[in-house]
Image (cartoon, rainbow over all chains, first blue to last red; front, side, top):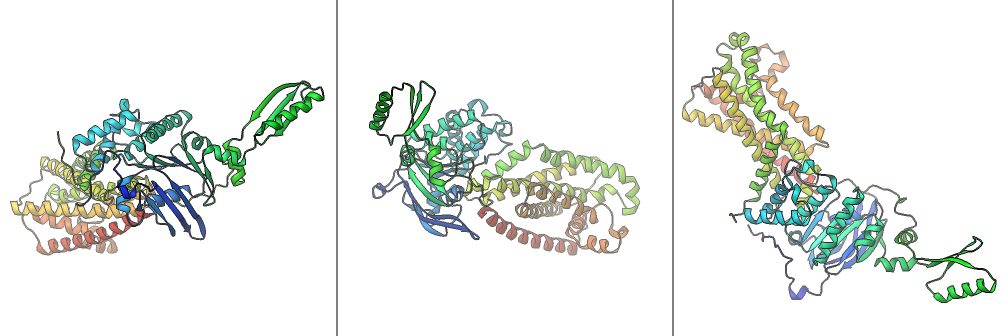
Length: 317
Length: 255
């Protein structure tokens, strides 16, 4: 056995690697048959950041995650996690990542606690340590009262939380969440968002994919918009909104007339508008300023809303 | 307090065993079915068949029931293996610093233990119904070895089947094969009564050979030809199934 034991705290990064980003992706390409799934995908994620890959179904999100988590090889390009190549150093990479997929890969016949203990023992923790770690995670993920219930009796949201907990037994510094809330109801989604926010505060680097704009907006420090296998834009949510963004001012006059005007964020234009109305003797009843939403940004960047996106299914797993 | 780490394979085996103990299907298959089948064969067919087999039908049928129950139990491995691959568990393992193939080993070990337990249950019921083996300790050792090998080989074939299956339903189909194979052998009745081509199959298929070898050992008249042939069958099938399982697992894990 030459395998090193899992670390319960994020491993120290050797000084030579200190300047490296947590994740550096460069020119990744992948094709399935004659379908180009990923085209020259390049981005970097600094340590401690929550990074969202936002895109409709079939954009290539899952394929990209599978490449980054050593499950699939890219046709071209490189990806390095904390300096380790996902192909050449995949054994090391697997010690640094946690992956939670779109469905819960937990055992229904076992209890929540048993599921976590199995993972702990697979990671070569002793029995006592595995139990302790399981209890910590159950507490952290609000599953303590369900610890001794079989997972078969869990709700969908509880299962997904347990699945996420199972991926975190080893406390890896890089967390991949592939559409963590797809198919969840609003309450479970909020609960999971809380968990992700807490993990982020703990200094982990989190890479998540989502087709929900709101999710990216709430959780991510930075967002890359993936469409048709290529990154079409990236930046903070505010930057993306600004990029397409026109602030609009909506005025409702006394006689019920509605005036909409694009301001480019320049207050001077609003003043001129109001002056003109005043000189015409018309009275403004209400004034509202509307900022672009991420939906607007998405529509402008990809030419379709996330809801109406072409649903080219990603290849079967 | 324990800080000892378990080898990956044993963690997987423990998981598989816990799962089968929790699963009503596999528990019924492992415990209730052996009792029911043994009682059924002896009480329903026993009296009528004593003359056909030329002796005590209980003595005749016990090895066959052992193989039927063990094979049927081993067939469940197809479903458990398939589920682990299709529901993302293997996928998760492949992103962890863990030898993912250990999961198959775990299922195989669990199946061997579970089905040896079934065999012991069959044996106890058989003895209660009048089974009187006359084997020497060495012959008993042979019986245990042969049964273990049979369960192991059958489990490996089931694992390969489960990996090759496209759905849980087709994985479950292996149970039918496990159920019918002993009926097309001399496990419950001599082959003389079977129509031509089935008879040829029944006389040479591994279940017949293993059954005959077990009967020989149990009654202290071991037949070295049957024994050798059944071992050759088991080794051949075992090696083939292992290679196939390894290859299919690689393919399934990569897809």
